[in-house]
Image (cartoon, rainbow, N blue to C red):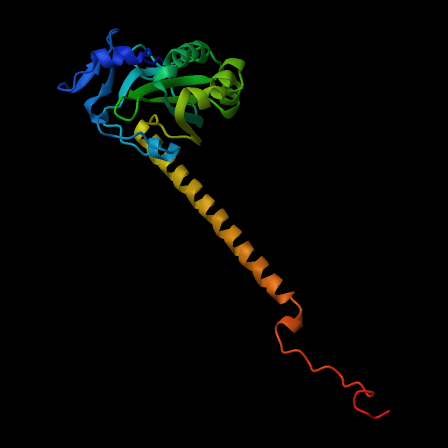
Length: 241
């Protein structure tokens, strides 16, 4: 997916106008909506992922072997197929590299065997979130694409290039194509399950610590829990010998 070119701090300062709803960089990219004003960037991946996307804009409609120039299916979908979605929040200072990597990956994507098609969208409001929703004939085709060197390299760079990223996949036989709305519902469920799993692990750790503490108490010498018995009287001290 194409991304916007980077801006220098000087260009940002020169172009920003506090009285306008948004400002435009010298190259024409409208980079930061007024809705960014006064907002703090999320501190966690979940914070980014749960943000609203009221301005989600499709930059590439449905494209691929199964689609015509108008983004309509030109053949029947397989009985079952695989859906995969990934989205991230690129850091402005790394957008040139992200754009280059996206171009390389997309060039391979469109020619990959087993591809049905994909749709790509961005949301400036949600910290320039970038979404890629793709459909594949089978799991093997998707895995082959994910394992190619250029894609692996791009994924490995995500921790540097993006504030956060996430993804989801599923197999379906629906005759209707998946939507970004469906993706958001599935991702929300995935995050909820992940949080529940973390909470369960935390609960188990606490329970284990409590069990260990109880075991330690039970293993302590009985002398620590009851009065000491009086010492035996020495017969010499008692004057019996």
